[in-house]
Length: 479
Image (tube, rainbow, N blue to C red; front, side, top):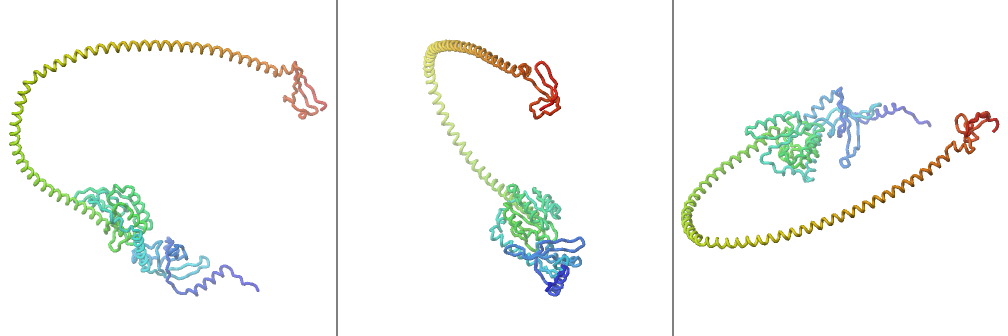
């Protein structure tokens, strides 16, 4: 019995009919957006996947479409409700119609979306990030850092075009207390899927100068609420916990705390609030210094008055004591002067006699030593002269012997080389072609080429034979 045969289009049409019967109504489907492409015509093309939570492997995949007239309503509704951009990586609950096209295959036509499902997933994701940071033991690491009393060297992570960046810097520069702040911008993308990676790069750059900056501020300066999802990112939050510099956030929202806010040292609402916090801290420190200055001046003045009174009393007591000591020392000086007047003449006389004796002994001893040293020096000079003359004679004899040996060796070498030359000349004469020919030999040429083999000759060839006294031309008639 022959098997029924179907064309591919017939098969696909049957599959389409079966699917239309099996899935006649719209269905709610949970999936994750892995790819998303907004067509210039307004249509949105997606790829939906299901991922195993344990193995992270894709267990299902399907194409999906949101036609432009539906997408224009669904996108702003979803983003306004969730505060999250409709983008790749989101888990969504969509209402769709199962469709099968004979050419393009299976796809889902999305008609509606439930934002509450995505919001729940976002909250769950944030909780998981916080729990993971707690398990890692790093959640409060940045909070535990000590904030400098006056943080004046500030590293800023923000977009160069952020709305609040210039206001933040102007507010620091024009503060009422005239406190100077040094700021350095490390540019980063502050929204979208590349924001977390961009901020991490900026944090790594700041880490190179960890001993220079007092504090790091991450400011966003307004923008849509939907852009805050970039700050619920585990790797970004982890990098902040590992930074050895206190981090202050002001990313422009006051409803929810992102993972970045939770791990930062200090969380504030806006860039303006961050600037006020820094200026307020510096102003409070300056006020504390003024108070300390007043207290110090008061204590110094009191101490100076006390010490002045003590010094006056001490000076009065010292004057009385000095008068008494001066009187005693005057009496002692007069007694000592009297003793000196009596003892100095006899002392000088005895020392003068001793000096005359020493002078005589030195002169006598010096004359004898000089004579002895001169005699020894003359004797050493005579020995040196004799040694030099002896060495000169030895070297001169050695030089004469060397000259004689060189002459003898030179003559012998010349004689040997002359004999070799004569021998070579005789050998050359023996192999001279003219002498060889004179001994009865001859050379035969064909077309100017020397004949070395009979195999190169043919009947009729013209040959030239070279003898000692001339040439002979012949023709080959027999071989």
